[in-house]
Length: 185
Image (cartoon, rainbow, N blue to C red; front, side, top):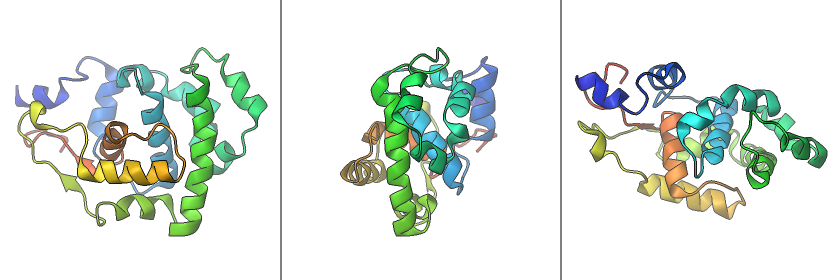
């Protein structure tokens, strides 16, 4: 029963089960994975995470497995062509934001040495662990997500509001919001 409270948002969906059990709130220091999660979280604006996760493989294929350099080098023609890809959310702004954000991530890498160093700077290099017992205790944003969102926006990134940024923090393990009694904690 207690496990089901942490798993309630996905239980019964094998794709979301794998994500919860093996990726969600698990620490990652990999720039490519972090960029992937940033892009997928951005694509989820106004939609369900389930929708995006079921399109994840199509996104990986369309965006060169989220290789930051390859995404930064995508042409207008390539991006326009993706607007016809039924495997993606065919929103022009969201599709073009992948290239835009990749270019900004490259600038961040040049400035900080890695995207990872930039991101973890916001938490002082530490995982933020909520130690929640009930799903209702989990916030949708935090001081860290608001600060990160503000800085990313100042740099020109798109689809990085404080709520999306909080979900991003969970996706790369900077925030651990698994419930206290979740076996995947």
